[in-house]
Amino acid sequence: MEAVSMIGDDAKSCTLVVRFEKRYPVVVAGLKSDLKYGDATTKARALKHAISLVVNGDTPDFRDLPAIVVRFVLPCEDLTVQKLVLLYLETVYKGVDVFGRVPPDAALVRDYLRKNLKHGDEYIRGITLSFLSRLKGNRDLLDRLVVESVLVNLYHRHGFVRRHAYSAAFAIYLWLPSGRQLLPDLLERVEHELPYERDAAATRNALFMLCFYARERAVAYLLANSDGVVDKWPGTVQMFAIAMMRHACNYWCLSKKKRNRFIKIIMSILSTCSNSNAAVIYEGAGALLSLCSKPVEVRAAADAYYRLLCSSRDKDVESTVLDRLDELRISHSDVMV
Image (cartoon, rainbow, N blue to C red; front, side, top):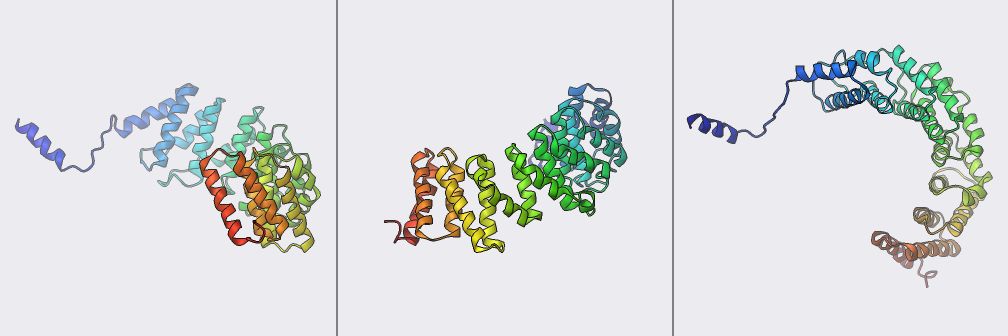
């Protein structure tokens, strides 16, 4: 009874109780064994556990873990394992591992990346390109051969690969000090491929790259393909085009002629857009009002809001649209009668 009482008194004064089923040495030994000798499912589970321990700041003895991953896990062809390997490499090379573990041998990882970028499975190519786009120009991994493999994937038959290839190329061009030397003709390639691109996300990423580095080319492309913007482009790309035109008119030095052309394109999008593209209608109306206060444009925006109000069944959307219409009634009382 006295022992029970003593335990109870100690427990009352404890603010946090942490209970481990196993000590760290046992956990680490088990993880390393699973990574070395386990099947694909076991390796995936062990790699998830290892990543969570590193990211959460736990400090087991993982100094030889990078070497184990490179030697025993990289050759595994399982898609889940491949995705987790890239997540682990991202954790290591982006500096999340704050306890000084040495990253894997960069030469082996570069060879692994080159093989993945030429892999027959488009999913592995895509996730590898996505990994490269998040590295922010790591000099240890991005050599000329890796960059050349990224460029080849701009012409891949699958849109999933191309959209991530544009993102990876943009990241290399932006973050790597020698990116412009490694990709001297990137903008010309992007401009050439844009008219033939059919994937919405790839088109958006390519346009974003042109907007960031070649404003005049982006403006010229939109003006030359205004019919496609209105009739053929999916809602995702139309949203980006509207945002780009709004930004260009407000912050770029555009001529009055180009500014008026952009306003007409936005009005055409609003007049032809189906009611199912509520986001496009809402953004287009807002962009139109921010660029012009003439009665014709105000009526076009008000009509777009009214269509959105009639077609929506979402109470939050209805409330937001009613607020915009009320603002129009106050600021343009001579038009809103």
